[in-house]
Length: 304
Ligand SMILES: Nc1ncnc2c1ncn2[C@@H]1O[C@H](COP(=O)(O)OP(=O)(O)OP(=O)(O)O)[C@@H](O)[C@H]1O
Image 1 (cartoon, rainbow, N blue to C red):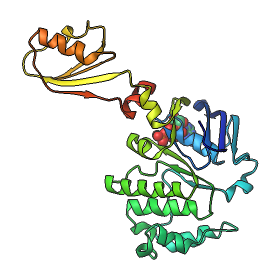
Image 2: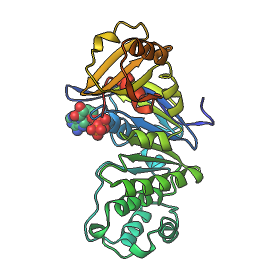
Image 3: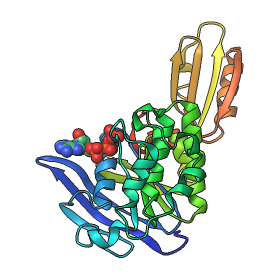
């Protein structure tokens, strides 16, 4: 359920590059103040979707409303209300942090106090550092600040943490969580499961140009709840054929002495009963709960 007013409404978006269909049929709505994730494998159509919604590309079909406006027709009106950080954004190497903010602020009639932004985003020490001398995490921080300098109500962040080391990624997550407190609506394109799970209120899973699911991260996982996975090691010879006929078992995978059994119902009891009957000792036995990763694989049939 949407919490408040929809600030973004996308219906049946369709976009082609010559004969290549990048976005087949994408519909979703984003509520005010939400962090909405767009998750999908490479080439699924995530960036194209966001570029259309942000008004940077003309769709071939469907309708898009951002704050009730058409991103192409009402571009000027929307400009000051929307902030965009695009995949692989670049700035001139020698442009200093403060110069970039000063420049971007000049594009807007009523910009944020960028000196304050520098303090708030922990970049005071890097104020006079040229873009080319910033670390990957600091560059991303600068791009978030540049997306915020126009005091937008909606921010699009595309693959913000790709290429960052785990520490810098976590720092960026904390910054995005801070964005939530400012009430700004965030659309976040990611292919990191952990990122989507941690940050997003809801997410759309996109595959092959179409939405395959929209839900909260927890909702997507609970769709998988009926599926369970048991892992264990065997110390002697093992025949998969012992377990595959069990009605509760849907799949048995063997990698050396590691066995992974997927199935439903009272899987643990059914499997351990058969193992005991054949006097097979299951070492290090673990039962795994479904994860967002499992939900993604089940929805798209793909692993990242
Ligand atoms: N400018 C373009 N010209 C032609 N084809 C394009 C163009 N941009 C994207 N495509 C193709 O459209 C499809 C969707 O691309 P898009 O970049 O939207 O996917 P994505 O989900 O963002 O992928 P990634 O995670 O790799 O960034 C891909 O098959 C891609 O090769």
